Length: 177
Length: 193
Image (tube, rainbow over all chains, first blue to last red; front, side, top):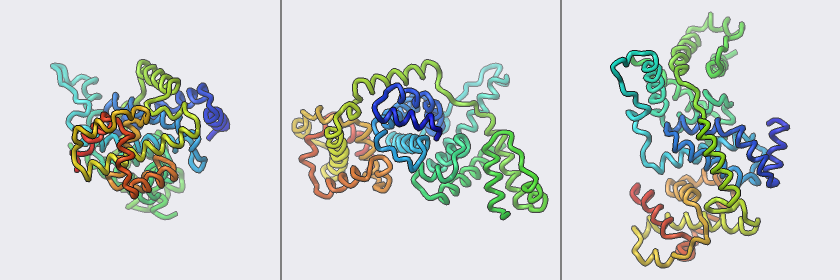
């Protein structure tokens, strides 16, 4: 945590809404991208990002500096995302992930790029929740396993195993002809 | 350096764009077929993963997010704790979680609510329990994930919630949930059991 961020957190905790607004601007894109990779639904991701940031605001007083602010925020986001996925009682239907409609010139570069993205997104969303979490936090957020373990509320070795399993499954999925 | 450590380093590098293994790692790879195979596996994944474009909020989504957050903070959100006094906040949070817990107990033990339930709990708007908070707590409890609860709420809240469940204060808590909240919980959780 940088001294600037520390100062922002202290000001926000004391009720300074401008300071909290600055923290929001620093983290909103990362939280949104993280949730979006978990849900593949922009509206849901937007709602969950808002829920996460609001919960953070309301619980700033409870933020303990045992973890970094970033880890704490991702922990809230992960909890809310997992709960939302369970609540909806269904994961995003795999075939619905950014489905691309082929057109007459469907072999153009744009189509191929979209189709490639769809394949990767489908492989990621097909991972079990914990593996998807571990993969997203490690690969996209570059978190250390200690931080990932804290976000996921599991042991460090469990987080490592989840990430390794995710890699194995992705490799299998993405190397299919 | 052990193979396990080498693999950790390769994995670290794999998550960083443009990373090249340093000389000592390259020497190990020259001599170790297992680690080379692992590196090759990672390489085959790197390309397809690079196909995915960065995800970010559009300008319109950013505006929507910031304005709705600002509104929620300025006016107090659905459970409004950010605008309450510390004492009110203390009790509201406990009542909210207790309400969620008992709603779950009722769903499990009583089955669907009868119309009288709605009449009993009509005045509970003051409770201001948000569906999100209720749902989070209810879901964790319904799944038996009590160990996760402290990560969502503070340990005191979790302990209080557990005590409420053990005390079976369903009647008291029913008076703290709106009919809509009970119905929403029913719709979202009852079918899963």
